[in-house]
Image (cartoon, rainbow, N blue to C red):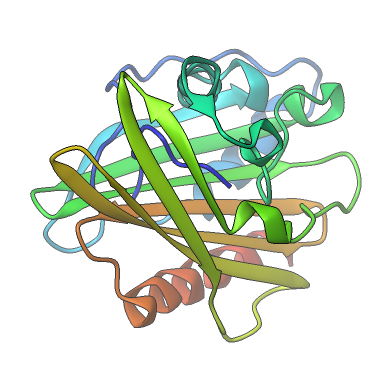
Length: 216
């Protein structure tokens, strides 16, 4: 799992360009409304920095920015670039209806995506070799260290990680949460100088609460 350009409840956010691609087919409006309803409301003390953007997951601006950031980075272990995350390079994932939003504050940022997959699927756990590696990002060597968090179980499947990125003049922590309910998968990144697991778990609880409401 790599977070190169920040995105969530803790630090950097993608450009605030609320553009999206229309979803094909008669279910577009129903899917769009359901996915939008699954997104978190604006957390206290934060503001909307980007979105909500709606459309096919692979076409969303946030997805494209993330893929471009990974392409630009030179990873010690290239296989770790998208580990434990939804793979937007897969056609069924890229074409899946999705909604994304990002919130920001001085202390960091939160980026959340909800994707409606064609079948129940969940990213594999982070491979052991991806728990610690280095990458060159915009000419700076960054060391990533990730540990799995003991988050209370959410939805049908859930997982949480905390990554420390150290390099250059800035150090950051990235909290990552994935929750699946049925064929909906919620992905959230919280980026900041310090990300507290309990705060991450509370965001996960609220996100899962919204997922439960739209999947009933």
